[in-house]
Length: 457
Image (cartoon, rainbow, N blue to C red):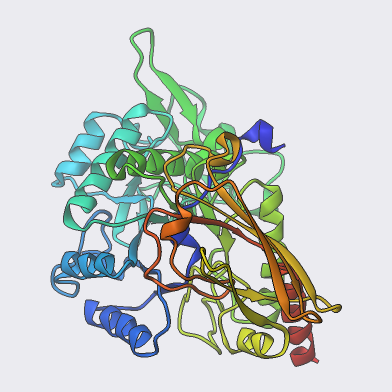
């Protein structure tokens, strides 16, 4: 299946560290205080994620120079410390007749077109009325890159976090004078019958197919010298995030000259070739925490190996502040701390390659695992064999951890101490990339789930 849809790309090393995010940091000072608190606690932090609070009036590609004044300088200091900054972006572009960005998009037919007005379909997002890029038109990717460059010129971000890219819409379909409730649609004329996708014999959940998203009768217009082409949103809806992620990956690869990192909420088969995923908004309940475990494993089958959930949830929040994500790991709250105390042993190995390894042994007190890393320059280091692999065998009974090192790449001499499965030090090799860290990871998850079950009972 993976050979058919495309195999996932390997993520940069820093993406596997501890990342911190919260919706509601209304000022840059609050973000600074958060980073300072990590340093005071001597707890490593690899990346800071910013939700929509950094934007000016929630407009894409903007920075609020009042509440987030000095963001570029702050991000520069993060980079000096080996940390990274990831801003959120939503698909909705502000519908503003006075905006040069909007005008350019209109001229290029880069936005999804309304079946009623034959103009850009107007939806609604956090910033108010909004339009959406029509990815079947190559000009849409051009406009997206222009926007990404605008933001990059203001702040040198390290990655892009794409949210609401189903694409989400606060209206249901076209907001401009078109009723889009189930069985109550009003449309004008179009190259195809605009009612074609509204009067279907089956409506999932008895809801209009454009409920809180783009109208299924809207279309992507592609100008062609041999005749314009029209692609209905009904046939393209599931591909919206796929094309957005692909375009973002290509932009980052070009401007940063290194392997990109792209995080997406929505996805389609093959998205793992250029993006990774988080679970989206979840509830702060033990039930949702349990669901997150098979959810993470399921995406291994879907070809998206780097995935994570909001820990411990976005909504209700009994344990942690809002949207503490994206943590690629078992759990980072006090629950996991209990698991570490009881089940996990920490061992330091390899004189020429100092690594601090956290091991979750099985019932026999044994564990096996491996670590793979490269220099982040090879397009596919596994196939070209440009990587280093360390294999581990741990025994509590013999109180030792055996290791074998294979395939040196010149990277190992510069690698600094690491702490795997929980966190690792910031002062590590800047050109070496950690790949796989599975040392009886399943045991960790099994312990976590059993602890959840005990608490629920």
